[in-house]
Image (spheres, rainbow, N blue to C red):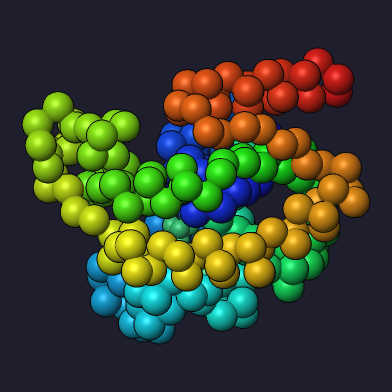
Length: 219
Ligand code: AMP
């Protein structure tokens, strides 16, 4: 299964991804996670990316395309993959088409999660992440069992700098301007499926599963 998961920041892509990874046995490739890991390690990529991610701006296309191209060539992607947060621009989508063509593979589906802005803002500003394993929480919607402690690994929770209220508005603006046009791009190829992500993680996942099961039956 080769999937793209799309939607504005805060739509729940990062909450659906581990479920899809587990259900379909495919690696979860999140460019946001890759940049955060590089920033934490202080690599040249991380230093370059930080200037953009802190402000909620997009990291330049060529940098992003290169890391995805390398990642897709890792052996675990032979089983399929879930791309999360990539592509985010038309240039990235076109580059992905070329990469996949060179690899002689194609996408099975693009899942787009729709959520109204007021809910997105509430979700992002309350989001907390584990410093150690990257697991995602929300102060009221998905609280950890012990305040500020990760249920999975015991690591401490923090708020992403780009989830601060000042940056969230800019990320939404960047999304509507640069990423939303991709919905038309993928509509033209007939790959896109829209779902409503306004409720909880389980409700959203049930919709995703229904779509993917239908696809599977069809093939
Ligand atoms: P995310 O975790 O997907 O919300 O990504 C966090 C940040 O990483 C974004 O706000 C961007 O600064 C950067 N980023 C992630 N994916 C991309 C991408 N495909 N293109 C450019 N920048 C990206």
